Length: 458
Image 1 (cartoon, rainbow, N blue to C red):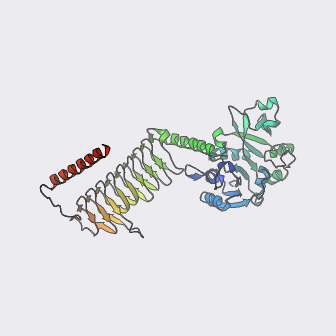
Image 2 (cartoon, rainbow, N blue to C red):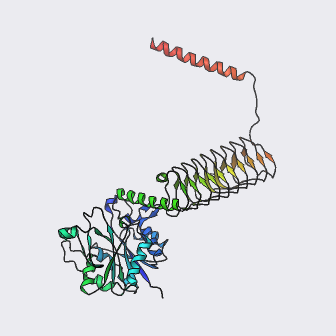
Image 3 (tube, rainbow, N blue to C red):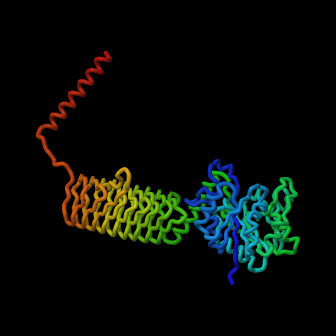
């Protein structure tokens, strides 16, 4: 029978150093709130039950997590009396009786599911407690995890550590896993006999040891346990997340010509043999199929890109965009809520919104679908093998039939039948000699202005 797991995420901190009207844990990394990253890792590590300890913006924090984990409850920490006190705010969830209890922090979004699974595996061996450590090149300022023969003896704050203990480079990462059988007993035994009068979670280590319990430590990457306290640290964590994900994509067969300039969202999906040129930005909800090329300085969000498709450079694909195999959206184009069928081409300086474009259609430069009438959006349907001449305006709702042609510079307000030619522009009129007359008039006006300026100067 599978072991059950409760994950308690501490997300009640005020986050005053963020200088923000939002709760700290709602600030985003890769376009996903930090607390949701933690919840996602916990869920992937097998924590089917999640308890959020909240303070400020409780409803918003719960909503961010509920999208990642189905079974989530919130528990208000009305007073800030230390980390053990925060965990006990979720007493009701602990009392449900889970095999494993993970205690995590909502402002540490880089924690990996694999690391959490390793901690749970330690509990499966019969350990009562597993603490998360990391190796620091400069451990100054961190609490140290003191061990002997594989057993954790204590977590010592630096100010309380001896000189020998300060030489230890295994530092406390904060998170821990506790056997659900003893979790509540350990937490309620924590006292506040210290200078700050607070209940420290780290005290459970010595309490557990004094009772003959087995305590072990796992090592996580230092990046995984980084907490975010201000915008500088948020940017640093973002950079780490991006570098980690870029590396994963390149190892999976994606070409990033200038990796450090590509910015990904938490759910960006890119297949092998895709090429990403420099300065490409992905918002949420993008998937790119094999063989596609995203050219430089393009921005994609909520879009699906088919095999062999080409986007950009300098293109913007907004939510609801779907490009089929070998479709093309050229430079300085914008596409929104539109499907572009196989082999169709949307050429430069074009806006396609609320539209359906058929296979092998050619949309000329400067074409726009006029989808908004000031109150409502309307749809444009362009058939297969159509040719839309440059600088045309298609006033929705309108349908251009299969095989139809639209002359350049046309304003189309009525449906165009299959295989028809539509011209929606004024007839050209040539006036012989009129161009010369205009040029002479302009030269005379410029000369008069120059004479007046000279006279004024004299």
